[in-house]
Length: 166
Image (cartoon, rainbow, N blue to C red; front, side, top):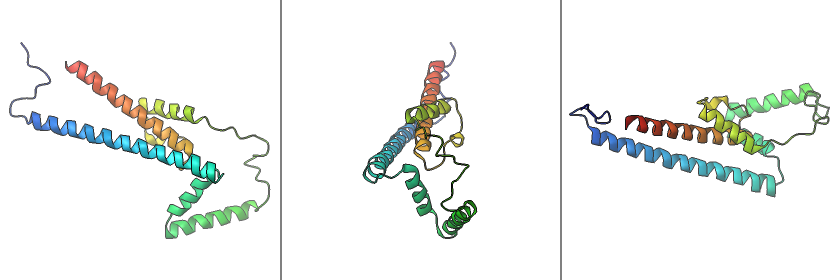
């Protein structure tokens, strides 16, 4: 009769290692739950307060938030870039490269964005492959989907490893 592959060799700190593994899994799952809750709270604030109460575009608010987060020289460099850009483009003139007057902006389907992120997470793609601009609702939704995909991929791997070991 062969030895059980799940049984570590004699002298191995198996009970201690098992306790550490269980504790790590519990802590990670709890933290991921908190992260998801925080992401949902941020989305709620942006939808109800920024978009709803203030009637402000979330992208505009995110630009202001980005500026707020910059410090000292970085903030001044960003402001200088804005000044230079507005001077080069001519403040108040039609910005042809945007062509927003000809094309009605099609709102993003955030559920589809989430699903695309989840698919990327399940496929093992890197979080940095998020195609949406930082500090946008689409970026956040894609990342939330990616995290869910990563969680499901890890669960599937854990389950298949457990089945293979039994």
